[in-house]
Length: 116
Ligand code: AMP
Image (cartoon, rainbow, N blue to C red; front, side, top):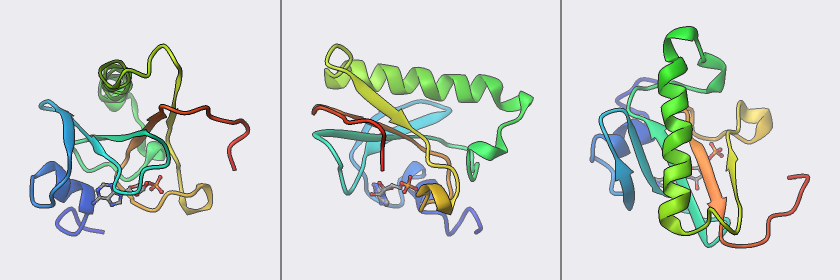
């Protein structure tokens, strides 16, 4: 898929409307359109990276940044204390449906384990 067709590239570019809760030069965080919990935010890199499998040493700093943004979003959303889950679905078999890397930040209710 080209970056022009990627929905999360388009969200990051402001071409598709989303409820953005945080953004900086490397990352954007916005509310999931189909929330699975009272808080459900997606954290994405602005750069088009299809999935976690595209990790590389050059991307270590960016991937670390995305995790820090996830923790910061959780704090701002008030779910740090109660607990939250950060999920990265990698590949269709694991439930990835949008092939632009995204971290789900989910919380605000009791989360069971193991996930389905
Ligand atoms: P995944 O199944 O892990 O690839 O997650 C993709 C997520 O993106 C799903 O939870 C969708 O509800 C969400 N999603 C898809 N399109 C949008 C959109 N335009 N704005 C916000 N969230 C979206």
